[in-house]
Image (tube, rainbow over all chains, first blue to last red; front, side):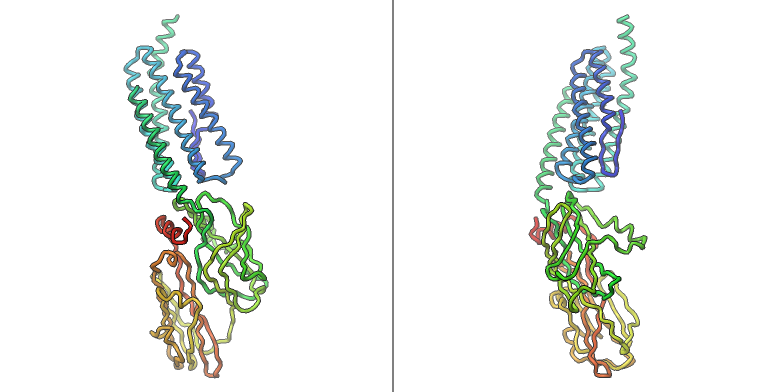
Length: 177
Length: 290
């Protein structure tokens, strides 16, 4: 996962290169597990990739000419929603994978993290978008920091998930052998 | 898992509702074209081909309006070439910082400043009055805007041996005072300004404690002092509060040689420095722009 933080224009878009890597990873997971939920997450990541790519191109062409216009703020919000739903589906697919491997404890932990992430993201998106719409600098700064913290939290979730999934995956490969 | 999906769906609905309401409010508050803050001022210009006089116009526009002003002209002064400039005291380090601050975003609005320069040599006559401006933007449109009443008068350097300005002070409360040492007997005949009558409610000018309206043949003896005081209070109505007032009333006097002379009284100034969203909304509503 990569970050692309552009403080100058207050854009918090992950580089489409990072999203491309996420798409490749989900494609691999879908191929290995055959779980339809990974494919759903993959399709969402492809949509986010396209969204991010178009935003980057538009940003380069427009050179800030449409900054603070209502359609552009709505576009930013739409992107943030898409990204939130994408990560929600990735987490849901992971929970489903853990349950299919009888790792219920880890799955329950991940479900709790997924809930926290969703609540945090919804709050952040609402405050950030309204603050951006009405140039409310204090809530905008607070929600920007909160968005960053939420992203770090997501990294922690994935890091912990890796630790939970590795023994399950090792067990599964040993079983296959 | 179902619980999380319910949270997600509820969250999405909440975001959609909040953004719909925000979009409707923002669209309702949109200002379709720039609104220039009115100015009521008397400003001198010099007659020097190598020096251009510069004045500033402030306007409120939508925060999403990124158009730049390329040119400006005034129907009341078609014989003078006015040009938009950013060449404003470039050598001043502090001003280099304030250049950045010349675009202030408040809510859905942006408060911007445009500087206009002209050469006093081109002005026919001793005074011009500007009330409207024709402004051309970089997107090709040209629009006419009300400006208020801006008087530009030719600086007339008169030899003045009758008095000497000994001290001058002004405060942020709107009070200013100028003390003039009288070197030979004079008789103040009149204090006048085309803007004093309409600023009656919030600007007072007093000469030795006398209201300027009561001044008529006021003798002032050699060796005494003439104290000129002005009091500017914050105007009650929002349009006046956001307007700039820079008055320089003309004091006419007779000196010992029986010559009629005139001088200007300075430091009568009001300009809103800080803007609040609520005040901007009230102002735009009062101007009929939203």
